[in-house]
Amino acid sequence: MEPRCARRSGLEHVRSLLRGLDRHFFAPASLTELAIVRIIVVGSQLLFFFPSLEVQLRLAAADATTFEPIPALKIMLLPLGGWGIRPDPTLLHAIWLAAIVAGVSAVVGLYTRPGLLVFAAANTTLVAHKYSYQDYHHPEGLMMLALWLLALSPAGAALSVDSLRERIRGSVRFMQFRSRTGADDLSPWARWPLRLMQWLFVLAYLSAGLSKLSNGGLDWFNGYTMSYYFLQDGLRNDIPLALYLHEQVALATMMSIVTVLFELTFALAILVPVLVWPYVLTGTLLHAGIFFTLGAPFFQFIALYTVFIESLRRPLARFRREPVVTEPWTVIYDGLCPLCIRSMVVLDAFDLRRRLRFVDLEREWPAATALAPQITPAEARHAMHVVGPNGTVYRGYFAFRELARVLPGMWPLLPLFHAPFADSLGPGIYSLVAENRGRAVCRAETCSTA
Amino acid sequence: MFIRKLVASLIIAGVLSFQLVALASAKFSTGWYWPFMAYPMYSMPHYRGEVFVQHRIVGVPCAGGEQPREIGHADLGLKRFAYYDQLRRVAGPQSAARQDPSQLDGEVSAAARRELSLLMSHQLAEPYCRAQLWERSAALGEPLPADPPWKLLLEWNPAAHVGAGSST
Image (cartoon, rainbow over all chains, first blue to last red; front, side, top):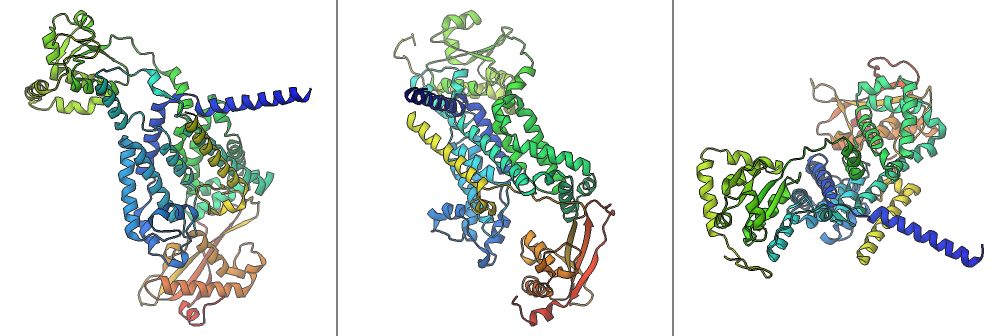
């Protein structure tokens, strides 16, 4: 091949590789799935893996000669007092509390990005502090990286108070409500943090598998290696299951092979998405098994398997029952009323199963009339109306009560709607709000009769 | 869009690079560069006939009538593996474990015993007049009794060792 052709061919390969990488990391992905990962990862760190304040304070009181701050701690504390400082109990307490507040904020999605950043920073500081006393362990590393990556991603763009407020703001600003579509959920920035976490998993497992091969070679699979670890941790931690397994050398041989094969081939979970379930299930069993036999807790890894959410959900769609086609519930609302528009945005957010259809009485009056001919424009402007699939019309407070029954996200409100005297007080409260709400008379493009 | 993609790409490349270096560099196996680290746990091979040895320290308080109690790593302010290592060195030549030559040296064992005695005097609230090192062992490939028995390996007066000096 002539040099020029060879160069062009080489360039084509490079371009092709870059395009492939671009698709791999930046093809549009679901913001909702990213948000689910945010909720599960942050939620699990808050509930199950949160650093113990007691341990932090005990370390802070330990002999100063044992304190050897690792670089991560030095970096995190640099803005708070200088390079290599040792945090005092007051500072640790403040960081611990800030982590809790930030974590809750990040889970519900209120000021999500600052919340995630503070949560990541606080957890990193606390764990790095724990590891600055000549001792370290492995379970938290990937989780900390995941928290930082979520903080840098649009993890708050869905399933969050922030996204709801943003939609309300936009809808009221333009005095126009538009129901969410599937296209609204896709973003080229939703994929890369999850992909990066997936590859970090691959590298972590690869490290484990290659260490076994380089330190032990084929001897690692002799059955006695795993048997020794069962014996060691079974005796140290008083684990009868481990002591039983230590005598099952043939089984230990098989488990050794499965373990290393899993660790060395984990990349297939990314490259061949149909294999993700077997790998995630095997990994879950592996980590659960490591805990119950060797006492080594790697539950963070199990929680982090949610980063494979896209590939995990795809096969489940095949097993999902086809929804019975039903007529939607139609919500007739006043499109010139900012409060009504806000309410529609909230209802739309709760409508995860897309059971609602929204009709703006000002722009779509013919459609509203066709559904509920008995409603007059004045009545429709005075209160929200909901028309059920069977044609039943619900008005005002009762319309909201019916929607609370229909939308699973609103089920926690049902006890309120069925509390004693709710049916007496509810309509009154609704009327009070309806009579005092603001209303724009005209939009820019149309002016309907007020 | 381009700038944002460039920044994201740099983050991806940076994080993956750090983690790849963690795989390759021995420095990362110490945990110093946490959260970027290698994962070499349980990677050393073991063989049939190899003996696993477990130690524990039991202290007998000086106060009359007090029951002997096991002294764990947390009591001495030691990390778990540092505690195991300390007891292994104290056991020295008398241990059933396959030891490296330095551990067969009685002086190393004596020095380790002095260190342990000092730790006990500094870390424990009450004084102990006797310290006992117990050991139990099991060989790979041999049937394991339901509750492998402990054997008393050494017994000494920690206070006497503290008074004799502490340097190794």
